[in-house]
Image (cartoon, rainbow, N blue to C red; front, side, top):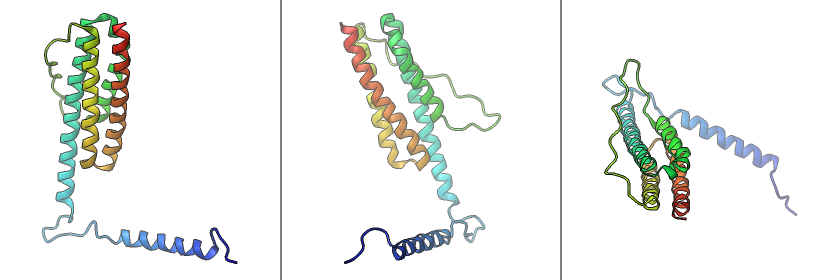
Length: 179
């Protein structure tokens, strides 16, 4: 009868395979020089950094636009302001987390863009429009995951999940505003 479970031989084989994989990964030549004297992957790293910065800047602009929409709705419908305040604060924190790192001496970003048009006259409709904007933000960040580096992808996934949750909460708030 054969023994089931982990055996000493199986554990040693797995450990050896992991060690061999680590050695082979370390020998990948990530710092090999090309004929120009630069590391082989420096161009790819620069392109990746540029794409990440562009993605972060777009996320910050979109977040600023959404913040302006929150402000318009809260101003137009004061009864919804208390319910919108924590959601607006979360959007503001997401913008801070997604902002690209600034070098010393770099001026702060431009003023946030103006929100498109006035808020809807009906509080329920205005809050539902905010929910749609949050859903759009969640979808955009989810799509951006495909091209983002792992660290940024984790952050985008977190913010996308938060945006989806906020869309749900805004939908519930719209129902309360109608009542």
